[in-house]
Length: 134
Picture 1 (cartoon, rainbow, N blue to C red):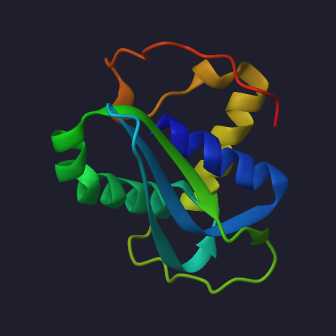
Picture 2 (cartoon, rainbow, N blue to C red; picture 1 turned 45 degrees about the vertical axis):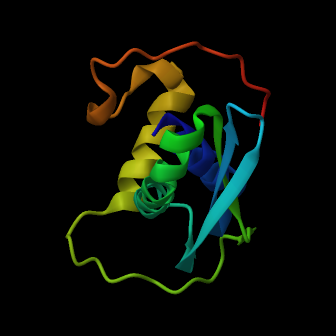
Picture 3 (cartoon, rainbow, N blue to C red; picture 1 turned 180 degrees about the vertical axis):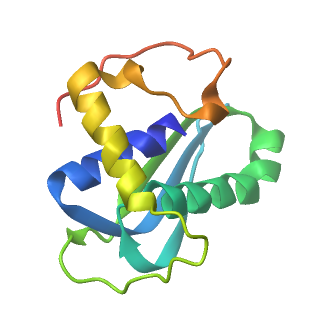
């Protein structure tokens, strides 16, 4: 989830949208696999990109269980300027882009550790690696 947060934050900061979510895997035997899913519209919103990423991981679960996993990575492709796009009707009533923007403003002001998603509470953050500047 934190990888997807970082990706979508970078998209929004750059004023870009993406349409294809890419999953990259490296296995114990050093073999590699790539899976992708193209969304019906370009977006920089966290929720649809996260849902697509989770679907890709679920689809690759048997392969991961069989071969073991040493690396997982996500990317967003089919990048475009964030201008015109097909809008989604707000069936759930939540304004996701406003939430994403609020999270980005807090993180820019107070740092990346200032906010954490509820789904990540109580989890070990794992090894912290330095990130190259965007």
